[in-house]
Length: 186
Picture (cartoon, rainbow, N blue to C red):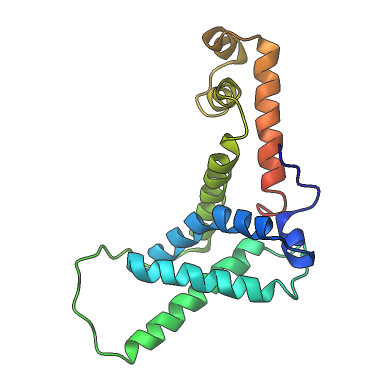
């Protein structure tokens, strides 16, 4: 199991390795893409914005100093919106292209929307990434007690394990998720 002695952001700022950047990209791509699409960009343009955001973050991390009192997600959101604004300004200088019929998603209107989407999508992605680190029974015990509102006794009976094993499984997965998201859900 991968340990996270300090947050991913601190590692990226201090002495990043390729694995740290890979993990950051794996974790944030779905969220950044979702945010970019919510601004009304086409799939292709949203993909470009995500790449632009990663390039900006990469450049900024050279002088980045993690401050727990600041919101990393707000900084990311600002970068996404700035990249979107850059595209809007560039598009206003070009003739309007014909529509390919892609679904246009309205731009976000509230701060709460970004906060909720950030937390939900980042947690969902972290769960996808760490799930492979656990045996199926361990993950099922976690999922059923955390999301299906089943009691540990019900889960133990269904999975053929002890009630204590259910508690341990849930605790291990929650600890791993906490380690993975350390400093990212401030």
